[in-house]
Each structure stands twice: as C-alpha cells, then as structure tokens.
Amino acid sequence: MNERKGDLTMKEYLEQVRKTVPLVHNITNYVTVNDVANIILACGGSPIMSDEAEDVEDITSICGGLNINIGTLHKTSIEGMFRAGKRANELGHPVLLDPVGAGASSLRTNTALNLMKELELTVIRGNISEIKTLALGGGTTRGVDADVADAVTEENLDKSVKFVKQFASETGSIIAVTGAIDLVANADTCYVIRNGRLEMGKITGTGCQLSGMMTAYLVANPEHLLEAAAASVCAMGLAGEMGFERMQEGDGNSTYRNRIIDAIYNLRGEELERGAKYELR
Image (cartoon, rainbow, N blue to C red; front, top):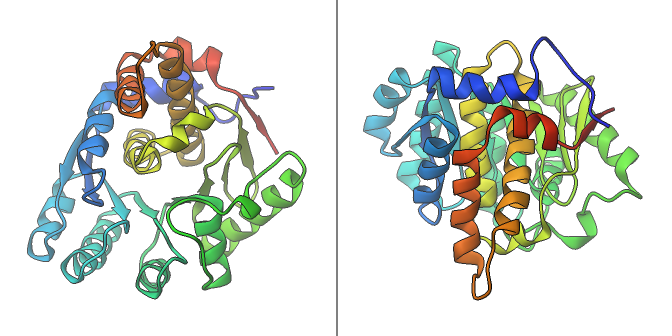
C-alpha cells in the first residue's frame, strides 16, 4: 500500500529532476561508468566523471552532488574520493557512498569504513551484505553480489527494517539496501519497496546506475532527501519491470540493460506514481 510522505509525490520528485537538471560528480568504477552516465542523462540529470585527485575538488565545486563508488579502487581514486568528499561537505552538497564489494577485501572494506568516518554521507547505498559489513565494522562477502543468506525476505523483514533504522541512527545517513525487497530508511521511517525484477541481477551495474540516479534525485529534492531516495529506487525497479515487458525473443541481458535505461528516459511522473509499490514502516 502506498502512503504519501512529505509535501511532494513520487511524480513530483521525478519531475524536479527533469526541471532542475542536476549536475552530478561521479567517482565510479570503470566497469559501469558509461552506464552510470547514461542513466543520469536518461533521468534528466547531467553527469561528470572524474577521479583524478588533482581534478576532483574543482569538479565537485561546480556540481550539485557527489556519487562515490568503490567498485574498482586504486590509490589515485581513493585520494580523489576523500578530497572530493571533503569539498562536497564544505559546500553542503549531498554525498552518496556505494560500498561495492565491501567485505570482499580489506582494501574495499577499510576504504568504505574510512570514508564513513571522515565524510558526512547523505546516503549509504548497497546490497545487504555490504551494508552489514559496514555496520559490523568488517566482515566477508563473496563479492559484489549479496550473500543469499543475507537476503531481505518477507520472513525477516521486520528484523531487517529494525536493522537499517538503527544503522541510519548510528551513522546519521539515509541507508538504502537494494535487493529483491528494497529498504530506504532514516532513523524513524523505512520505505519498503517491492518494485523490480529478479532478472535485473543478471546485469552488471544496475546498482551502480541507481547510485548515480539517486544522487541526481537528492540534488533535485534537497528538502525531501529520504523521499527522493525512495522515489529513485521505485523508478529503477519500475524501469526494470517495464524494460522486461518489452523484451523480445533473442534478447538477453545486454538488451535488457538498454531497455532499462530507455525506460528511465521515457518514464513519466504519472507512471511512477501509479507503478511505485511501497509501504512505510
């Protein structure tokens, strides 16, 4: 059951992105950088990609928000993440952390934990394994995919909602956990979102794309950060549903990726308002 939260609707959060054309600085991984740029363009924003330490402070200064993704770390990009993040904090810009593969290696885990320690993060967005790793201050996962044992299910939903609210309270950040059931929470409120298709997990980078698009939604809706983050998750899941419906015989995951981006490009506010499947807890 959908419940309205705040002064705007899902439709209006989407339309604010198209109206304001937010400029988003992305320090993201080289596996998905092109897709991240394209989905930000598709949703109505404008992307800039830069991870060179000597470049990032100037780039962040002209943008409205910063998306940090640790999927393919190297020493230069790590330095750039901290420098860009601190500059974004000085300017009061939204900062999103996508801790890709946290728990898979000490470098990834420690980098994410140090970014949490040194930066003010508006949103931390990842799968449940990555988020649990950060909440515990360490741990192991099998890689960038969530461990099946950690999946958010109807059976453990109450426990999962309590966990993300608690982690949000501890960090002061919005926590967005994406998977078969998505959770987007601050310390008081959790959006439980049931949009999307299991087939989206067969495409490399849907989470990375969501992080870029979510940052655009945050920049465009500064007074409604939790709601805007949830709206972007609903939009991505709905695009997955719409894109899958348009698949034809012989299409595979590469075509599906493009159909999702096209669905975001063509998504209208009224469609998001009707198609968003969420409840508040």
